[in-house]
Length: 416
Image: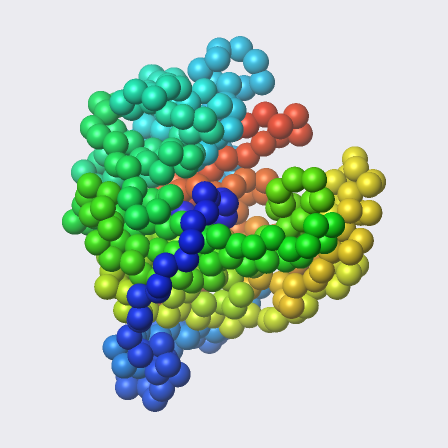
């Protein structure tokens, strides 16, 4: 799950002091082990060491033409969505999708305030929830997402009311969890029923008539099963926002092609809080102490004004005025190190390569559950990955007419 959505803001609390292990990350190696395959197999090499209780895994970058051997099928096995016809297949503002253990697909369709359920072949079975304020119902722009919950249940998020709703696998509404302590978003559940939560901190606007790239912090905490705060984990760097400070209203963010972003998700019993400023994924224990750092080589390159103009023109082919709007847009120091990061249902880490201007690939580097790079897998184009299972990849896409689809593609892990 990524931290890309702007949440309701609140004042910064005093951060929890993390152990001094952060300063000792680059200390002497106590244990070195190599894995991930020999150099001849795509240049793979992983070095694992321990530094003051933190496991650090250093990975060589796989060669761009190398492939892990896993394959995504040539076409979607299931495609849900239609331009017109049965309303149960008309999707609008899809916030997320997941697959239950029996193969059913649950779609968070915020446009109608529903969780829509489809069988493994994409046939509509039921719709849960609905718009409203009652138990199991959703407010505006909700459900904003759907994620697994322990015990084959699921949680649906209501981003503007700071709550989640928990449903059983058969659609029975279990309970609502309202977040306390100013937290706005549940990142994920812990195995013991507690939750990992986050919120965006407040920031000051600049002078009216100006624009700037800002980077508000994200604050994290561990909440009890009833939503009360067990522990604040402190503030961490958030995502960059290009902010236009208007003269007659509140400031508003605008898209920026090369924004460096924050990512947060669960990785087993660890919580990941990291950014793509550099190719590094940091995982913490629930007491706030750093447990694991995964690194991989990557080239650092600064964007040029031409890169920015090309990116904006590509995104806005029918809006020639879009280039004028970015004439004074500032440049960031470097392109992001990667584009997205997910953990699959088996605990493998998948990191999407950031595509530099002119690149057409959709490559992901796959790491084993210990953080050793295994190789690269190519994804279908124009497809936003939402969930990766043992033998499937679930995601969303929009066609040229902005019709939304949820699709499941087969994944074959049999190759070496």
